[in-house]
Image (cartoon, rainbow over all chains, first blue to last red; front, side, top):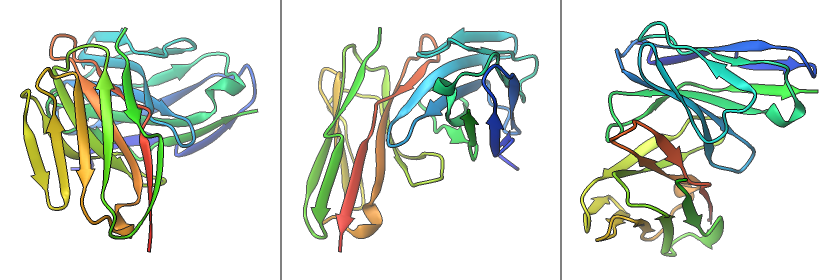
Length: 112
Length: 111
């Protein structure tokens, strides 16, 4: 099993550009999450999904969009990138909130 | 709005000392997890607690869940340099599936 994979690992965007961060898991987990982490800080929940076709906002959803058309994939879309979106983005999946979350390796995004 | 607070934010101690890290919520936890994260890596689960008053031990780490399920603590005995890292608590809601993290405690253990 590959676990949770994320692409790309690094990306530099110019202000106003758009991009999609990809996340795929092969553990058949229903629950998937997108977090962002600023230097020395904890993880802030952007969006989450409890199953295919179901998504919901987290703590910091503004400027982002998600979709969940399959159990495996949970892409995160950034529209009109802003410097405030410079961060490390982690995707995670789990079979339930009392079970371990498995994290991807992260995407380091810089917006200049 | 859920609010998960950790304290202290930063802790620098000598090898062999004991320490305690706290995690408090504005609401009752459904479940609470503690993670440890090293630079450049994703968090790794240490423990999950779900029952009020629960105590779990993992070698030199002791985790307590408050009776009212609104607070938790992590105690490390005789800290070692290998314990250095960012310690995060995460609160899960069984009703919504939402999982949020505290801001973390950065621990530095000096040899």
